[in-house]
Length: 43
Image 1 (cartoon, rainbow, N blue to C red):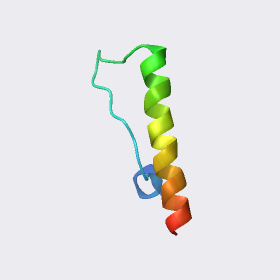
Image 2: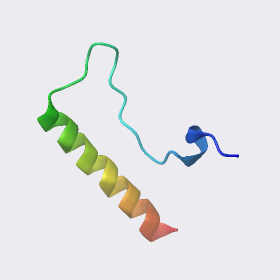
Image 3: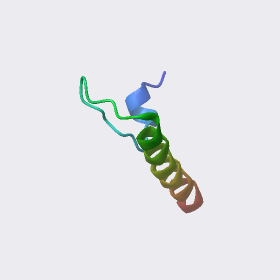
Image 4: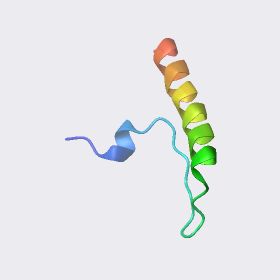
């Protein structure tokens, strides 16, 4: 059985009470998805 830590390639941590507006979350997700895509191309 896998734990989520084993399957995590990239993530963005928002501290308690520091969740940004939707626009920033979308930008952060784009960066994370680019990291996933790069990883997949290299494996």
